[in-house]
Amino acid sequence: MLAMFMQTLDSTIANVALPYMQGSMSASADEITWVLTSYVIAAAIMTAPVGWMAVRFGRKRLFIISIAGFTVASMMCGAAQSLQQLVGFRCCKACSARRWHRCRRRRCSTSIRSPAAPRRWRSSPWASPWADGRPHARRLPDRQYSWRWVFYVNLPFGILSAVGLALFMPNAPTRRT
Image (cartoon, rainbow, N blue to C red; front, side):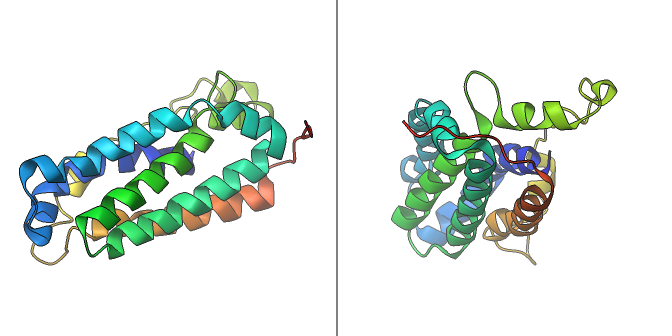
């Protein structure tokens, strides 16, 4: 759930920080929208091979590597010094997020959670986390924080998610094809 919260939060939180990024990087309105557009395009491209990757490498390994990649790419987005770097790192984030978001016609988080959770929890509000980052993001690029914190906020969630999955998620069989 924490990983899905982090991914959903990240898909909306950057919208609020766009004007701050635009000023910091001296970009035009058309150029700065590539921060959002690149994320959507990379996520769409990455949808196709995810099922094969989950079967080939195993859901647990794929999920942990994807969360680690997302967390590192998020850190790099916060450290980006140019618009080109920021767009590139956002593409990396989208590819990592898509890998854990979709697995063989259903979400990886759902397919992972289903066998582990008691039946009564599967339809609870906690079963399908959804977060809108915009109300929280309005506070971040204020006077005391820069727009970079919009990306750094993912670091503790990513670390906790990866460690939790490594410790508590059972291994699934893989196929070598």
